[in-house]
Length: 297
Image 1 (cartoon, rainbow, N blue to C red):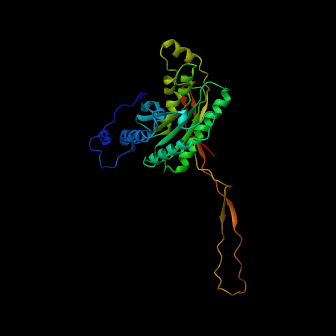
Image 2: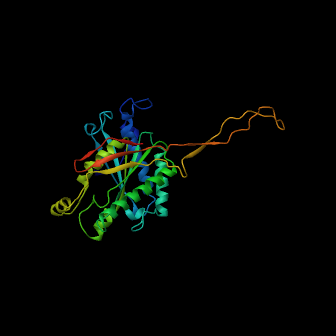
């Protein structure tokens, strides 16, 4: 991925000639929407203190790396926040400032087309047990994703994943390296398959950044990647038991009357309400591949 530089003053300049003001397939607008997204999110970043502002990166997944039904290159936006922007040390409870950022991201998503997706990825440093770090990164990504979802995001799909300590951004065992490796990443794209492919494959090329090649190679040689990390969609969960009341229709009876054969309204009947199932995608960095979207019924 590359750092994003200046953007066009008018994102509509990215549209093919003759496409303005006409109804077109979603593929025609994917670059325009990517440009608008970057500009909106950069405005969000401007409200943060300098040491809490994110870095913006982008890449494009070629059509041949994606499912055949997508049939176009898909740009992916990656926004990397330092850990302290959202959490205190060893905590998955969102800081008050983080809740404000989540509200702004949700507001941004409400302006997106219905097919856009957001991935929230949590990362930890190498201190502590590996299992603990993975659990913490999952809890943190889930906390952010659920908070954004609760603010309301229209039809945007939100997904979360935690990598623990397995994907260090920089090489090294000093406090500076640990601080950079503890991070929250947001990925935005028109299709979730594009981000899943980037996480499984291209992400590996961005790891273990160092001042010299030997440190980078040593870091990459020490990586211990699993064959299966799961990206899970955040779906609306009922706050209480999955129950709704179904009332039987009753005949109208005039006040004070008691006609022969009349029947009192029956008691309400309780029926089950099935929550929306969550979708998942399997990420396999060992094979640099992502699975198909699975529906967990």
